[in-house]
Amino acid sequence: MTQHSTSTASGNPDRPYDAEDISSKAFWSATGEEREETFARLRARGTITWHPPMEDSLLDDPDDHGFWAVTTYDDLVEVTRRPDDFLSGPGILMESAPHEFVEAAQSIIGMDPPRHTKMRRLVSAAFTPKQMRRINDRIEANARSVVDHLLEVAEAGGGTAEFVAECAELLPMHNINDMMGVPEGDRQEANREMKVLVGWQDPELVGTTQEERLGRMFQAIVTTHQLCTRLANERREQPQDDLITALVEAEVDGEKLTDADIAAFFCLLTIAGTDTTRQSTSHGLRALTDHPEQRAWLLEDLEGRIQPAVEEIVRWATPIMTFRRTASRDVEFRGAQITAGDKVVMFYSSANRDESRIERAHELDLSRHPNPHVSFGGGGIHHCLGNQLARFQLRALFTELLTRAPHIAAGEPELMPGNFFHVVKRMPAHV
Image 1 (cartoon, helix red, strand yellow):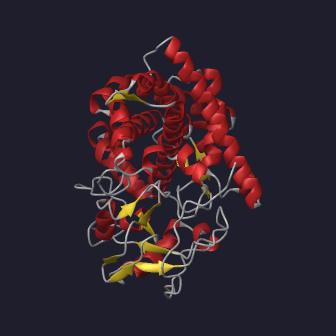
Image 2 (cartoon, rainbow, N blue to C red; image 1 turned 90 degrees about the vertical axis):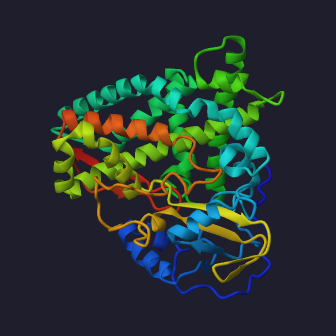
Image 3 (cartoon, rainbow, N blue to C red; image 1 turned 135 degrees about the vertical axis):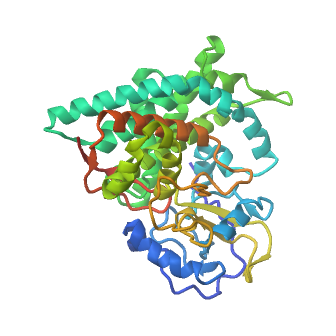
């Protein structure tokens, strides 16, 4: 498989870099609170800032001269809503990535109109509020089952369980696989390969060398595509009431999705639909542990207060920290001269702490209303298609957890270094 970059050469490699370091492995190995100190200084600039390429990137890309950092709330929303100027097709990661990776794993979030428009129409029917309400009973049943499992493991472990593996990752895994129609025997394999695609910066998962990382990631993509293609072929012969059948049968303007289209969307949904909920759940439990007064407020009226609490947990966690765009043309933005081909990176974790738009942004407030967080995007054509699914899952799981284990407490989390997902790799929970 040819490993060529999706980046476009920047027209001005010699412009000076900002003094703040947001490109190093050390920066992305720090805590969110430590990174926020840097983001606050960048927001104070009142413009976007230019930075060196990411250290230890996926590819050695001679055309990668750096990236523009979009750190304020207003600037992030502006970039999000200008898809003609700021493209998704060249890739959404800060790092340059192989073209095959973008095509095979990023689906509609790595597309621009008109291709994006057609693809989104084909897949969006599965994510309407009506469809989400239809599967809500299944989500609640899975939440009960997952909490049953967590409590059993904790009882066997003297009151302690590994929360990520025994709870946070299980609920979205089962829900996404239920929606897609993935059989029980294939779910663990799909979940394992998803972790690889999320954890490309984790040597425990993908190795330490560039060759090892790329090889393991491509292996994960191939395995996931083979599984989805097999299921798509089975659904053509025997349709079921699941999303793979809906994708196989979907048609817009006389065109159907190819197996490659279906598999790429399967990769996207498996990654985004699973990991965002997993991270929000883990960060959320830690936040409730660190802020007992907020937990007490929530427990006073769990049913009536869980909805705003979920919104605040998603803001607090910001499970996806960055998305990249690529400038389609030379453009002036907030006084900065962006050149066609420049990477423009939106920092959601910074925008969600921007006190010019979110009052007391550094405080956890489960009653916050309104809560204009950008954890599901800043609007525009790439706003998160599965946002209602994520909300349903978080509401179901925290309701079940806090009803049956109201005093559950999180231990110290082990975070995975990285600039895309805000990953809690492991975290003990004391029940």
